[in-house]
Image (cartoon, rainbow, N blue to C red; front, top):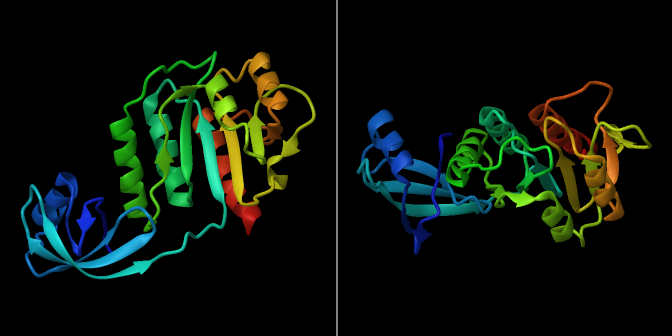
Amino acid sequence: MRLFFSQNIKDDHGFLSPEDSRHVVKSLRMKAGDKIDITDGKGFCYSAQIEDANFRKCTFTVLGSDQKEKTWNFHLHMAVSPTKNIDRFEWFLEKATEMGIDEITPILTDNSERKRIKMDRCERILQSAMKQSHKFTLPTINELQTFSNFIENTAQEQNKYIAHCYEGEKTDVKNIKTPDRLTIVIGPEGDFTQEEVSLAQNANFTPLSLGGSRLRTETAAVFACNAAHINAK
């Protein structure tokens, strides 16, 4: 099944994005009357028929819909400091979406080497990974925010972990709990400062160990994401 994405479905009619329209018409050479499968990124899969095979704006008629349950039974929120080499952060976005994630918050820490990200590009990567992996729920990516703001914004969350490299008592990643909601924070290549770790712990974040190896930011984030899914099974 080739899966396409559209946020433009209303009254059993809709249209694809310019990117998907070009792919359908130019690459796949599909024509009016051909059937396609579409997700709205909100858990629904639509069976549709192409109305106008226009490579700029391919329109379709919805023939039927089916609500798809997530393949994981908890809300996974990961806050990650964008890497200096943006390709590595984008790789995390792709792989986390393939595995299953609900919410991503890029965070700006004291040791962050990247101060800006292109949100529209991040959105496209998430959409592409969702389609490729046949997921039907598009992860939410929040605007880049400071670490302190993130800590404040998640004050009401209960099941929160922060991965860092300092000595001290930590929960092994194999033992993290996955109730209804789970938040994991991954720092920059230079790690969090001790002040940031203290700020998080004072806000009820549990220190998290990802094992004995020193991991890159994106590797640590993907590893933690995968561990959350394994622990939930």
